[in-house]
Image (cartoon, rainbow, N blue to C red; front, top):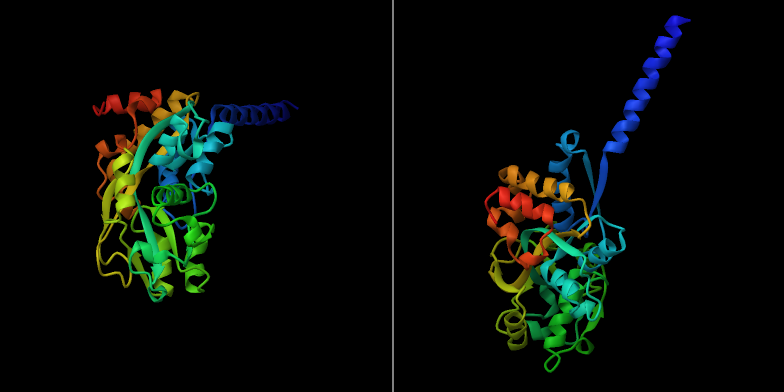
Length: 322
């Protein structure tokens, strides 16, 4: 009888300890993008580093594949996501109520950190006849699925270039980025816009199944004006030889992939997220080729510092970066 009580009390203590652990553990989700892009492995890299310290921090991190930048920002606003990765131009527009968010600013949006640079990439089939940007007239071009960063940026391009070329001058498609390599191979589209860090599995997949080319967006007056007018855009180059059959450098413009959250997110959680990246920076850089040239200072580029979450400010100050 006495032994039975000992077993009972031991089992009860064990169950109570589990309850205590479950209550102490905080679960967070990072919204990313297509599984073939760079957002998804970026979210995975952050979560892997955070989950190694979950016994200390009490934070358990998971990743969700989503529609991309605009979707993530809206989902954070609604409380459907805790964190999300979004293009710096989308973040700026959401916070200021401009662009896709005209008249509907999300003032509760806060930045955690920036990660890798992303370049607006026009991928085409070599047999499409597209050699320069204006050659897309009359062609079937994917501008990005609704809610994605590439759709938002594609629309910005056509808005600035409306006197020269508009969406009416092409046959627009709205596929997810993950669908584009097969659509290109099967000649359902002639090309697609993709705002992404390089190299990316998506374009490698396309290049391995069909002859592709990358089209420069530099030297087009309306695009040059777009980049000049918007503080979150900058010129960059996709090196030659990064993708099969593309043996020339490609000049284009881009943004920064930015991790965002809400203003009311627990500062300790945000602090731990930034700190784990800073403390394991070399290890983080090895997690994807897109981070190869990343510096700690780069984590603070591409956004207005007034948007930084207090938890992130604390981590960056401790590191001597603020």
